[in-house]
Image (cartoon, rainbow, N blue to C red; front, side):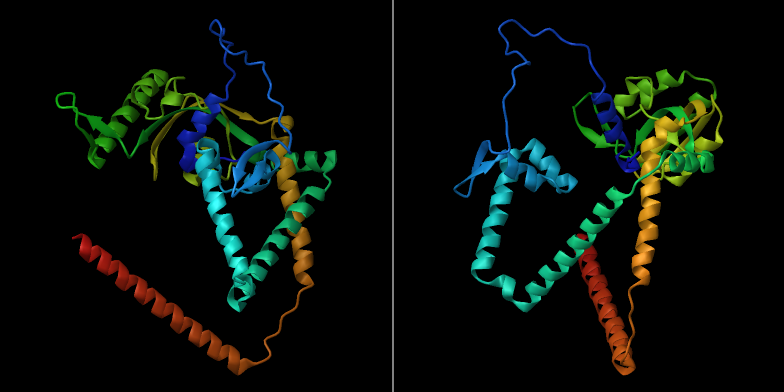
Length: 333
């Protein structure tokens, strides 16, 4: 289960957005959604720097994008391709001017190549490991505590809350005191037996879960390392019906109601177990490879000088950064 807790609200939104919806009849004369456009890797979909750009080209350059670039490609494909075309043109000019042969940049290219090859080897090796049914069962039975799971309702109160003045239409951000007062009020109502679903609909800043009475669309497990320790431990220690929280987080405050506690069946966590076993096998293989490497420092005077000079350089950089920050802070006053 790969989830980033700071993006909690966004992930919940996605989860509900992916829930199957009942079919809606198409308006008269509207295009039929069953129409299919045939796309192959050779299909030309754009022209980039004067050359035909195919669907296969797009697949290649988007394969390893970071999340921000992937979002740009999905939402603004023309802007994404413009950035790509610009980068391509700069790279071509760099090669023309033989920048790749300048020692500094040649060394950087070699370092990047080494890192990419090493990462590729790790990914390839990890995919090659075979996992037997016995290994799956053994891991599951040896880690029962990690597969406890809680089904919960949640109320999220954001630190960034804006209040609109109905008189003049102006908006302002709620103060920390106002937000804390809201958190305490909702927590008190919930712990006094208030209808948690109704409270979620009225007070939660995550409208996607709020509209479903606060229901979180996935289980939180004891081994969910992506969930902050304080949240995970508090939920696992609670019993069905308990109100947990409010629990503080950089993005806001979370209040939970435990719907149920259970043990996840093997089939529900098979993918997680396979990943964990592969990771363990990879770590073992890496230790074997590391044992084959050798390093000796053969010139003690050089290394003493190197360490001393490096420390001085780092200290100078830190002082320069602190001075620059003080200048910025002074200018902001």
